[in-house]
Length: 158
Image (tube, rainbow, N blue to C red; front, top):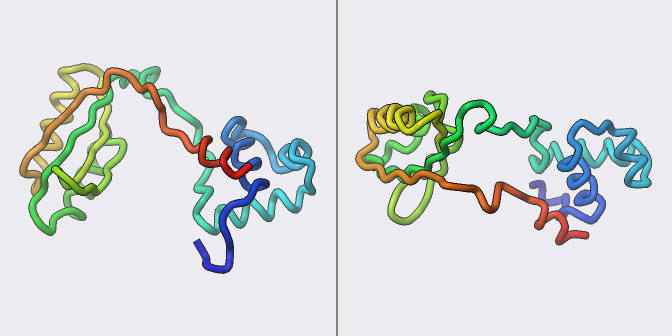
């Protein structure tokens, strides 16, 4: 975030909430619903993109409906100084959805998906075969009571 640009304001929050709810809305419709000029909406979107707050408009996909009904999380302990290399190799595994560098027991937290338990075993085997991975501990997600969200943070600004 640029130092000259302050935190998000209520209009930014309203715009982001609107686009979160209906990502296919155009700039003109956003301006109509927010009660501001089209140029204002476009300027806000441009600024939010430039600051890295808004990174795009991908569709929200249901991995279960796509055949990947199993989600698992693995904590990986890796060899010292190999984080970047291991992360690059993990990114090459299609079923690896996210990798986070962490503190605590492990070095990396990996979210992965699979079609079945047998498929998950295959994915785990691929992860374990990555050079630099020393130990893993995997947990299967049974449900997602709180899905990824930013709405409460935006609503706080209103």
